[in-house]
Picture 1 (spheres, rainbow, N blue to C red):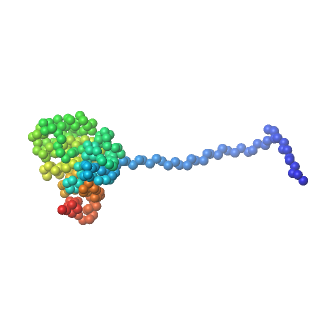
Picture 2 (picture 1 turned 135 degrees about the vertical axis):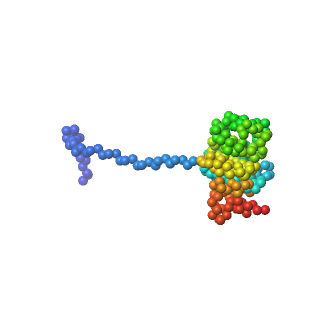
Picture 3 (picture 1 turned 120 degrees about the vertical axis):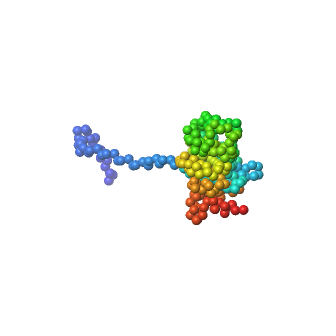
Length: 271
């Protein structure tokens, strides 16, 4: 027998029995969203495969490093190892053949140069200028230059601001130029042989006070041959030879071996 189709009567409003009221249920709680994590600060100095060639001669060969804030780093190596070449490229006065370099995450340019205070190996001021004129020049050129601090440093180093540069000894000129560089409130200081001609009596003050104490949150890259003198203020060191990095490590690395950085350096580069 064929199934019968049953036609249901449309329910009217009066025939609908009201369902018992149900209290509104709270909406399900939203799943907790991951909180954005603070972005890690960019290294103060970052180099990747940085290379500088002068024709067939390679002065710096695929140099790679990352240096955070608040470190004093010794850049060590014999003559011709690429120390000055590296500092010049970070400062932006020389251009790499290949590779990248960044300062606080910025490519080398006007913005990065504003964060860098650079002391070249050789004097660069006119010998006819007076020391106070050099201070005024820096104060006019660099918004972060601290004139009061510069005068304090010069006073401690025994330098007369009225002196003409031509009348100053090589060591005193170095004191003046180091004062000019360190009196800036920079993120990165690049010092190329800053105490080579300075008398031993002034070295302790320069190293322990100017370099270590004045800029604890900044990074200093210090190129020098005077390893024994600077060892006490260094946090890390970089060894260069023939343009290549041999080692980047904390000074504690060599102390754990029962030796000093000076002895380690002499053994590594013994002729």
